[in-house]
Structure formats: C-alpha cells, structure tokens
Amino acid sequence: MKTKTLYKILNIRYLIMMSLLFSFHVNGQTLNEYLLIASKNNPEVKSAYTKFEAALQKSPQVSALPDPILTVSAFGRMIETRIGSQEARFSVMQMFPWFGTLAAKENAANLMAEALFQNYVDTKNEVFLNVKKIYAEMYELQQLIKLEEENLAILNTYKELALSKFKNGKGAMVDVVRIDIKRNESITNIQLLKNKKEPLQVAFNTLLNRNSATNLEFPAELPKATVDGLVASDSLFSNNPKLVQLDRQKEAFEAQKIVAIKEGYPKIGLGLDYSIIAKRDVPDLAMNGQDAIMPMLSVTLPIFRKKYKAAQKEAEYMITATEEKKVAVTNNLITSYSSAQYDVSKSTDLLNLFETQVKSTKQAIALLIASYSNSGSDFIEILRMNQDVLMYEKATAAEVKNQFTAQAKLDYLLSKND
Image 1 (cartoon, rainbow, N blue to C red):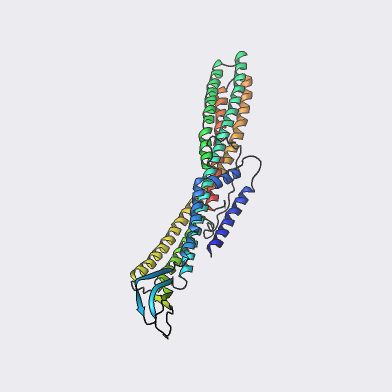
Image 2: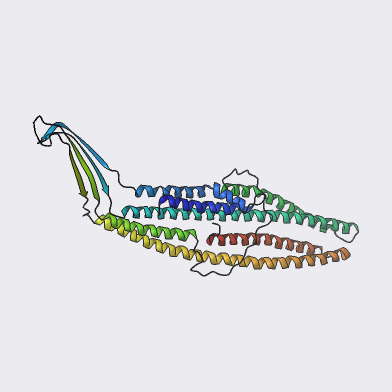
C-alpha cells in the first residue's frame, strides 16, 4: 500500500468518525458534544495523532533509492593517452538494492504507521472514557445537591408541623430542636456539595483542554446502560485498537524480516564514466581527441553475514514478543470486560432495590405523619425514616453513576466509540 493511499484511507476513517460523533449534536452542550471537543482539543489525543502523521513520513524515506554518486576528477598534470591528453573525468553511479527490498521497507513503514494510528484511536477512546467518568460524577453531584435541597424543604415542613403541635400542647419543643439539628446538617451539606462543583469543573475542562473557568451545565440525567449477553471470546474484541495495533506491529516485524533477508543479497550499481580528451598535434591520428565514454557495473559482496542473520533474528524475536503481548492484552481485556459487565448488572439490581425501598419508606412516613398529627408521638421515627429515604435516594444517584461508568468501560473495551 502506497503512503499517500494509506494516509487518505486512515484520514477518511478519522473524518467519518468525527462526523458520526458530531451527528449526535442537539441543543445545548451534550455529552457527545463534549466528546467531540475532547477529540479535537485534548493534548494526548493530538499528540497521538501527530505521531501517526510523523510515522507516515517514514515510508517515502525508506522506499527511495539511495542518492546517485557523482565524481569529478581534474588532473593537475594532464595524463597523456594515445589519442590525446586526458583533461577531466566525470563519473556517476547509482546503486540499486535487491529486487523487492524497497517495497518491503515501504510495507513495514506503512504497517508501523497504521499501528500508531490504532494507538491514536485507543488514546482517543481512553480520553472519552475519562470524560464520561467525570461527566457521571457531575451528574451525581447535581443529584446530591437536588436531594439535599428537597430534604431541607421537607425538614422545613416538619418544623412547621412540630411547632404547630407544640403550640397546641400536643408536641414537645425537643422535636423542633431535633429538626433544627437536621436542617443545619442539610444546609452545611448543600454548601459543601456546591463547593465541590469547581474542582469537578476544572478537571472536566482540563480534559477538554480549555479554560478551567469555563462554565458547565451539570447533567440532570444520564443515558441508561444496557446489559448485553456475553459475546463469544474469539470475536469479543475484534475492533479493540490495542489488539489491532499489535496485529499491525506483528505484520510490520514480518515485513522487516523480509527486508533483513533481502538486505543480505548483493546490491547492483550502474554508472557511466566520461573522460574529456584533448586533441594531439598529430596528423591523421585515428580518434584524435575523441572523448571516452565507459559504462560501469558494480556489485556489493555481502560476505559478512552475521549482521544480516542478527537482523532476521531480531525481527523473529519481535514477532514472538508481539504475539505474547497480544495474549496478555487479550486476557486483561477479558477480565476487565467481565468485571465491567458485572458492575452494570449489579447496579441494575441495586437500583431496583432502592426504588422499592424508597417507595415503601415514603409510605411508612406518610402513616407516621398521620399518627403524629393525631397523637404527637413517633416524631423521632419520622426523622429516622426520612433520613433512610435520603440515604436510598443518594445511593440511587451513586449507582446510576456507577452503572453509567461501567457501561462506558464496556464501550471502551469493545471500542464502540470509533
């Protein structure tokens, strides 16, 4: 594959990926819009892509013929020949490697460039994963603030109820004090949670490589995760750029082995020698002053074989190392995939549990409030169960975050971002 062709193919793939990502744009700054900004601005992604661009420049270097050699000789004292004095001499020589050597070098360079492209894809996917993680933390923080504010509103209602019962002589002042204690806790928690927004905003904007003070709209919801069945292990990570990169590297080392073999063959040089001859003052001299033209052929003698054998061995070792590396990476991917899928499934079960617990606890609170309105008892239990509701709702927000993060990890492992 020629360098320009490879460049066009991979560049087209990059542009298609960008356009697909951009197609998810809706009004406001959505997650997909943030991912698009990260893919364009993140310095790690830009560095990885620049390395790929640099690798593309290797192919024209290794596939070109060596520069021809031009030799010019001028004689301080002219050399006399039968047909005249030799005044100057010009020689040009072009060396040619063994047949197929340049093509093998170009192939190896192109494969290494494609391996670096896969490294760029993996870097981009990893940045996407980190963006999604912080985005999920932003969602959780926003939910916690909302829940604490709702809880404060509920406590205010309880305080009015407790004051009313106290004024009517059916309640104790200690109930109002207990509510004030919980209200103070809630007010402090709200302030602490709001203070946490700035560090998250800085971390998120840093990933997008933009001004850390850029305002963000914290998400009110996250896309729901999907629990897919296990995929056959032989096709599970067929698109994972880590494995594709290792495949390209292995192919590049195989091409380098071919280069090492061909480098051990003779190199052929073709040249031309041109001598300027001055005329002699001799009448009727055949070919008097006629310049001399002499074709030349040279052949290198690769008799020192150790370096060529060592180069072949080096390529073979690198092929083996790449194969072993692929096995290790595959094993890690399978482990991570199984763990992430379990996390998604676990979060689904917990979310169902928390939903049931919240519903049941709220029903119990409603009954306790009705009882308290009549008798003025069980106020401590109302507060305790209200805290249970808050705990379950906060746990729900945390599990939504965990489930989304686990799904993002699955997408990263299966390379669903590109």
